[in-house]
Length: 513
Image 1 (cartoon, rainbow, N blue to C red):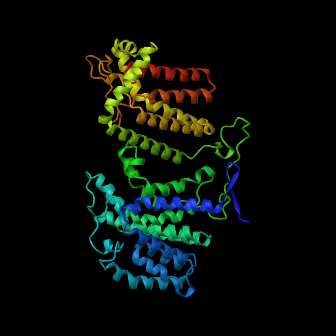
Image 2: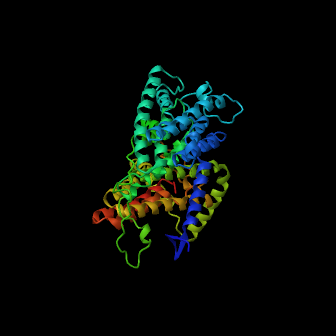
Image 3: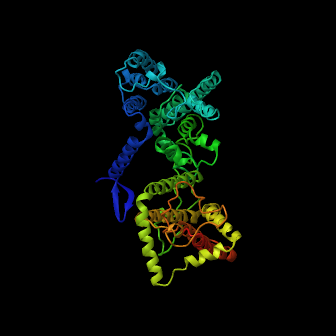
């Protein structure tokens, strides 16, 4: 009878083979869509072949007499595979290391010199057909050149002896440290992690490492970090980020130094894997962490026990998730913004429909609120500041408050916020609506008659015809519900209730919704 896992969908169990096939399919899609494959479509197959050869030797899948030969041949296709040769030596397989070294010496130069060979990884190192410091370069040398270029008015590729010496010294130190770590992981029964650690040292130490060299990183997926179950996904997510996530998706562009760091995430992930990350040994008590069982929730539980939060989630994962979600939100609104010329007529027609409905129910109060706000210059300026600043700062403050003081409520609140924002984006797409300030003949304005302040303070990605639903009111209402459901102070609950009311007055008074 087939073994079945404990994974359940409803009352049915899912065979482990099905889960394995789904995981393999997801891994294949990720590999094809990852930057290393896209940037080096002709070289990626050779890197995969090199990885297969090195793993075959490391896992003992090759005959003992010729063990090491596959690693030597792999080094002919990818210089990173050279890092596996000293690993063979330091793990007691010296005959295999010598055979691999001989095979590499006999094949590297002839194959690298063949121009017809597609995607030879050695050719850029043996010729001048590369520009060190280019964005795809994942080596420490390339990272130092990019950093130096950014601080020298964007001039990259201008090498200096000091930078070269620094890269060589770091590469030598990283190589020694990584080999010691890799030998320890191999003795601990983690051969793939050992190969990954050595390969990451090779990626960092090479004069230039194109992005396809990062295909060695997934070998380290088996490495385990952290002392809590919530910390286990951090390392796989970092690998995914280095492989497939563009830099602008995680860079909030709030500080030049932070942008420099986030622009070199692949290099930093490789260096951390080689030298710094404290991967757990199999004998470590934290090797087999298990998620704590949530307390009973009674019959009215909305989520099953496996989905109910128990402890505080990992902060790094939450920051990455929030930033990635906001990047998706910006891009969707930006895509909607590019279609504004086509949306204008439909947005005005939809506004006519809304106005007709309001007049039918005698609910057309927006012009009166706008005129009231314009009577006081100071009041209107405060409303503009309110509209611009609090829309982002208050939800972030509520999220931080929940994360620090109410971690078990944080996940649910964050998920509701993300789902609400997604529904709003669908609404923007299906029902573009002209705001009162842009509706012809509405008589409503969003600027003072003789003042410089106006509604034109939003980012360049703002969609002028996304007046319904109002995310300002939606996010404010989310803040109020989150605070009222969690807070104990009556004053805090009262302020939370007033916040969406004040927001509604501001968005109507400034003629934005």
